[in-house]
Amino acid sequence: MPDDFPLQSQTPDALMLFGFWYRALPSKQLGPGEFTKTMLLEQPLVIGRGRDRQGKAFALRDACPHRGMPLSCGQFDGEQIECSYHGWRFDAHSGQCRVIPSLVSDQNLKIDRIYAGSYPCEERDDFIWVFIPDPGPAGAGFSKPASAPTPAPEIPKFSEHYKLAYLTADLPCSVDHGIIGLMDPAHGPFVHQAWWWRTQKSIHEKHKNFEPIPYGFRMSAHTPSSNSAPYKLLRLYADADSITTTIDFVLPNLRSEIIRAGKYWFSSLTTVTPITRNQCRIDVVAAWNLFRWIPFGPELLKFVFAKFVEQDRHTMELQSEGLKHNPHLMLIDDADRPAKWYFGLKNAMLEVKKNGGEFRHPMTGPVTLRWRS
Ligand code: FES
Ligand SMILES: [Fe+2]
Image (cartoon, rainbow, N blue to C red; front, side):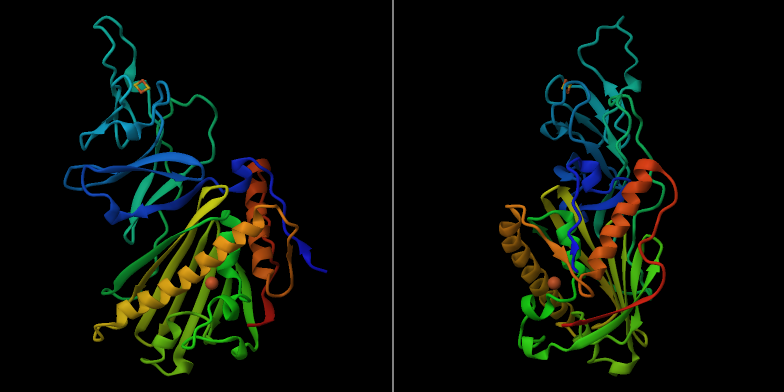
C-alpha cells in the first residue's frame, strides 16, 4: 500500500521550520553600503552591507516598529537605516533605534529600548545566510536581536586551494516538494534525459545503503553508479573504483554531496529555501580542487549543473499546475522512502518545537533501498 502524502496544517510555523539558518542571497549581489529586500519563510527582510571596511552583512525585518513602513523604502547611509515615513533611524546591524526626529528636548522617551527586528546574518561560501528564529512572544519593537545557537553551515573542503561556484533557481512550489524532488531517485531517466547522461533504456535496478545521522540520513559512502553530475568528469582523473561519494540530507534543507577520488575532491551543499508556503528557491554551491589544469573544466561543470537544475525547475513548474487543485498524492516504496524520511524528520522536529521532548528519528538503523532508475 502506498502511504498518503502527509497533510500539513496551514500556519507558517507548521509548514516551514523556524529556528535554522537559511541562504538569503549571493554575497556579490550586495556592494558596500547597498541593501535589498527579500523574503524568507514569509518574513519580509531587508538585507544590506555596511559601508565600512569589513562590509559586514545585516538582516532586518522589513517593517518599521513604529507604524510598519517597509524599511526598504528608506535611506541607508552605510551605518543606519532611516524610515521614509517619520524618519526614525535604526542601527542596521543591531536594529537599535538611534533617532526619533519628532521628539522635543524634554520628551525623554528611551529610544535605545526600541528595536527594529534584526536577524543573525553570516556569510559562507559566497552566500549571505540569515538565521530565522522561532516566532517569539508578542512585544515586537522592543526585542534585541536573537543570537543563533550555531554558526551558519559551511561546505566541507579537503584542501587549501579550491574553486567555488553556485547556481540558483526559483521553484514555484512548496519547500517540501522542492526537497523531495531533490532526493527523488526515480525521476532521473525521465527528467534528466540526455545522450551524454542517460536514457530510459539505461534504467536498471539499483540498491543503496542508507543510515540515520543526527537530524537526517546518509546514503553511505559508495562507488557512484553514475547518479551524480560530476561523476563522469571525475572518471577523467581517477579510475572508477577509487571514486567514492557520500550524500547527506540534514534538516531543515541541507543536501551535501562529497565525492573523493584520491587527492581530488568535489563537495557541494544544496539548499531548498522556503520563500513563501508556495514558493522556494534552490541554491547549489559547489567547491572542488579538480580541473586546475583544464581551462574549460569549471565551465563544463557549471553547464552540466545548470542543465540539471533547469530540468528540475521546469518539471516543478509543470507539476505546480497539477498541484493547484490539491490532488490526492502518495509515496511508494522504495523510491519514495527518502521522501518519507524527510517528512518523518520534519514532523519530529515540529513535534519537539511544539511539545518539547526528545527528537524521534524516523529511522531505527541502516536500511538498503532498491529501485530502478
Ligand atoms: S513608520 Fe517608520 S518612522 Fe514612522
Ligand atoms: Fe533532478
